[in-house]
Length: 154
Image 1 (cartoon, helix red, strand yellow):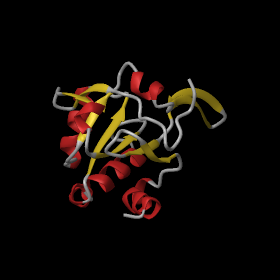
Image 2 (cartoon, one colour; image 1 turned 135 degrees about the vertical axis):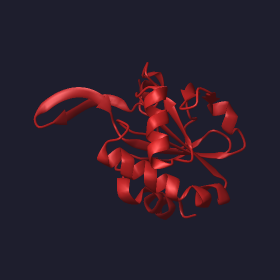
Image 3 (cartoon, helix red, strand yellow; image 1 turned 90 degrees about the vertical axis):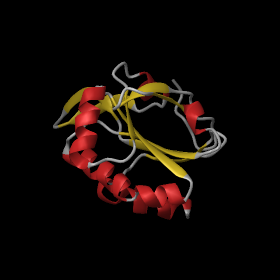
Image 4 (cartoon, one colour; image 1 turned 120 degrees about the horizontal axis):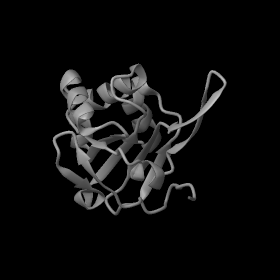
């Protein structure tokens, strides 16, 4: 699997949201998309990132962006997570890790000297034509909206 780069076509995807609907890249044709991948619902960094993006959701919509989060958690986990924190955007359950692998964000991680496979927190900003405009590999979970705005100069 080659790593995705800015300027490349975003890989097509299809997945189930927290409310059981199917969502695909094609649903965002003509719209801009912030597609972010995170390791696990209800963990401190993932909660901070989701809440920051949700708190700024009206801003994103006003600038023509939709926001979608993806993790390997189940739809029921996503539903509880979204309800608990009042998240206002869709979360895709990628339990088979297909999207994670297609986007190159499933890989080796090291924690306390132990190696394991997991989600490499990454955000892709995708334009109206399905082209990756920006990739964030070092995500500031508490100020992710500010980080994205600064880089893409909205």
